[in-house]
Image: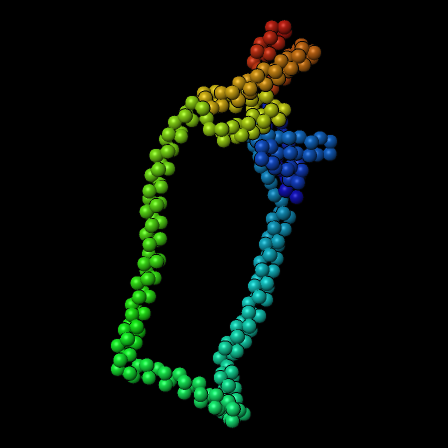
Length: 287
């Protein structure tokens, strides 16, 4: 299996099977037989994954099997569709229904159906030539026949053209209004930030409070110390850093005052709590 190695700012190194690492939004969780550690993204300085030849061979075999299954499925779907298309083409091209109607009208129902068949066409054609053949109605019918196609085409473009012309006009009028309102609404944001941004700042501060390391607080303070929108959150980060520095000072007061403890203190807390190192140096002398 592939191995993963993560190194942090304080010099610690976590290495093991890739399955022992779980990635989250703000941190990476590392589990082994004895401990369970959260490694925050702001503390990671090196992260690498090494793969073995067996992993590469397994991935290649998995890709080949995936391509084969997709090819078989596509061929299985295409072949029945071709058969259905041929069947539909045969059904559509078959002239059986009109032949059956012609045979039934001519042979089986000659006494009754022929009279009906003769009556229906005899009614329809005489009406058309009678209406069109009379000299008095020719002008009226022709005018109606000419007027209907003339009335229908203009009505459709008028009905369909009016909303299409109206919509871009309304959009052109509305867009400048939105652009004019933006500077007015955003004018106060220079002094007081938009409340919709506060949840983002709260999540940033909460991610700091959840961390066990103190250096991310110093990095956050140095990064946003000039940001007016984050002034309150930066102050909260400073307060939390001072509390943690005080706790660290109490813990080191109980440790032996020698050069090894001083080296440990400098390596871990000289960046965020330099005042503790200064006080500790006053009590001992190391060359």
